[in-house]
Image (cartoon, rainbow, N blue to C red; front, side):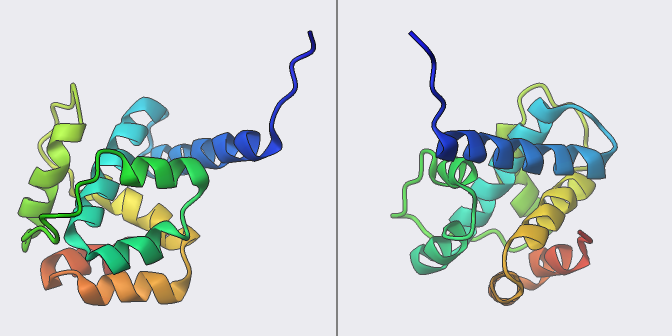
Amino acid sequence: MPTKTIASFESATADAYQWLTEIAGILGDEDRHFALQLLRGVLHALRDRLTIDQSAHLSAQLPLLIRGIYFENWNPMPLPSRDRTVEDFIDHIRPALTGYHGTDLIEDVSAVFAVLKEHVSWGEGDKIATLLPHAISTLWKLSVP
């Protein structure tokens, strides 16, 4: 029996791999598994920092598989988190990084922010920047796609 592919799934997979490749490229590392862990951690920390409406607006601009990662294990009841500092935000990400032994995740988070900024509309990116606490917002604004 011939195997047929479903174009939307093929496209979704390609989009997700493209994001991981972009993150890994910014980090100067070809480890897409780490890029996936990092993307998952940052998306969850960002999602948990935004209100339900804000999360819905951002998710609408994410590719299909990335959107699935964004909502993975989501519990909207305790939102938004009270992360105020970059350190708090990074501590929120750290559990997603199995086997990571580095201590400075600021560059890693900036890489994910840069890819997000590259792929979401300018208006959505600007809205996210204004809704985040100042320290985290500065990290968003300084990330360069």
